[in-house]
Length: 148
Image (cartoon, rainbow, N blue to C red):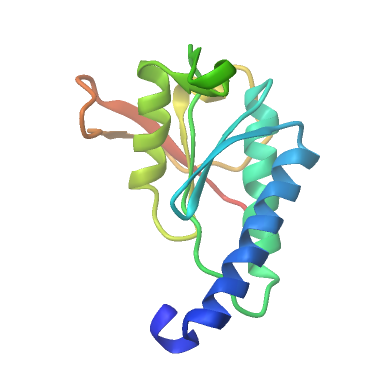
């Protein structure tokens, strides 16, 4: 997409993308912990809010005239504060969350089944599948959330 748009238009597209993601994350009670290249690491008080934000992000992007396909991974677990003034998170579950996002397909919301325990039947989901995640010893069961 960058080749087609050129640097100036790509920069504007990414600014709109970032604005849209930050808005949807905040609207659902999330906190942007950090920007990771062209992605975001966000935390939420509960799993349903995280999935609601992910669905809102995908739907909003689908309404844009031009937008990059976004892969979203959601995982729930323990984390500890790190970095200057506790501005970041660390721990095994943070790594699992990053890996779940990394294996998601274009425009996919991929959620660990561990995350679904407190969500109930609020979303339409694929059948669970087991995925081996880079750097994670045990496979993780994941599902896709249907958002369209």
